[in-house]
Image (cartoon, rainbow, N blue to C red; front, side, top):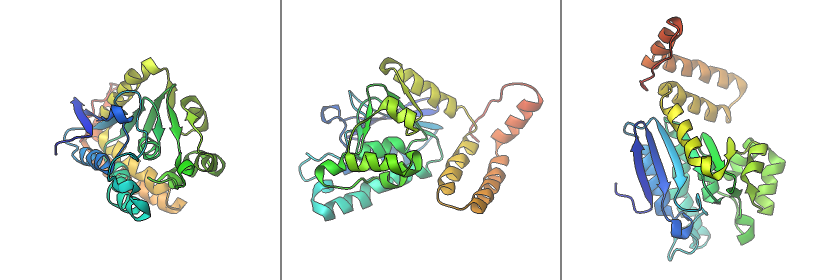
Length: 260
């Protein structure tokens, strides 16, 4: 698939997806969401994905100014855009077997906020911020925000973000536990790249199983979580990486994981 709204590049086992509409602060029309979803699904040799934005923004939300944009064609248009484009992207992020790092280089608003928070690790530049601006235009948070936010930061802070529609600066987002880390702007690319490389060189089968276990645990009871861990350990334990990990431990050397 050729892409109009994103750039996809690979550096060894790390695949970088760059939202590439800098003139629109990377506002995300449904077509961009579909392209991101396709890029995540076409994993190839990718063992980690890094998502970032071109220019001075991560993603300013759905592109409300796009002529004929399905996302703002009335209530039914919004429903269709979410059902057909945005929600399938968020679900693809949860199903992806490779870890995902979001390098938030600027505003992450609306659906852009949801895309960022859908990653396993969110590293943000100190100048970046997170925003649920829907209340300011008479709409409701979407892209999974109503599910994610209270689980990440609790009901009170989720309510603040959703009902007041105020910017949450990166450092505040870190202190809340909304994101993994806030860093100096000039350090963002290096920090995010180093983390992505570390994950890409880890035990990919086990990491993928951890992602699945975490998502399921947020939706199940304790007993079900215990069972899912046992199933996951069975799957991970049969991998070549697990054999390498145990062998390296016994031989007192650093493991060399292959993602198999």
